[in-house]
Amino acid sequence: MHELVLLASQAQAEPVADALMELGARSVAVEDADADTPQERALFGEPGMPAPRAGWQRSTLRALFDDEDAATAAAALLLAQDVSHGVHLQAIAPLAEQDWVRLTQSQFAPVEVAKGFWIVPTWHAPPAEARVLMRLDPGLAFGTGTHPTTRMCLRWIADRAPAEAARWERVLDYGCGSGILAIGAALHGARHVDAVDIDPVAVTATLDNARAHALSGPDRLRAGAPELAHGHYDLVLANILAAPLKLLAPLLAAYVGDGGHLVLAGILERQADELAAAYAPWLPLQVHDREDGWVLMVAKHE
Image 1 (cartoon, one colour):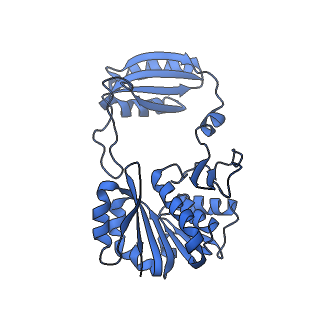
Image 2: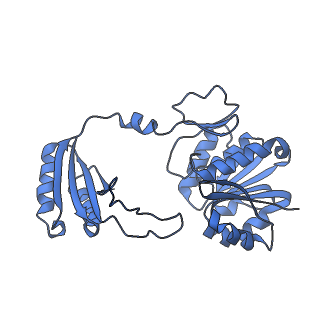
Image 3: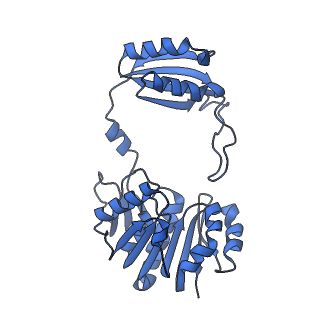
């Protein structure tokens, strides 16, 4: 495997990357050429907000080819095109062999969500202190337990389960992603869990993860499109983002049964007042937890 390295301007990065794929590159990575220098600039803004700029001022493109001849031929063809005017060839070099699977796996370690409650990738041995264990690998759908919003939701479930799980007859995970919240609730005593998402990939991931935990089936955990949700639930969980959570306020509030809880995440601290106001006609939403600029908001239907 050989790596072709190019330097391109902001306007050229995307068309050059597309051209490299057309020329047979196995993959193309685009990086900030000024990373770790005083000229480095953040590209992405806060979740749910538009990016402050379309790309880095200068980008390094790293394209992988099967061998040196393929990389050299691609460079010659690319640099002869008008789209590449001003693009600079940095290097064509052999790429050291790597165990990419092992390298990727090494980036994901077990996560302790609450005391005794661990999320552990399937390739790791469970920690000795794990009393409740969730086996979850990174996949196509959002939710591996590493993001603060997910951790806060799971922490709430684990902390409240000793006192509340006896009445969690029906639980709804709205916008389920990987199904991590639905599975977390089921592992902590919820009897019937509905997990819904508009993304079919998320539904498939949730069903796969539920089967891996022996939780699938109509009697424990079901997953499907939002139309699957119906009636009242003792616990409603939604880890999405502030904008859709505001739009969904009347729907999510209506799902919460008498004495039930609504638990919302994906909310930045500065958005807490907006969410409380949006839900005020139905439920008294309040901040329950904070982590890394995010908040968890909870309401109880009295």
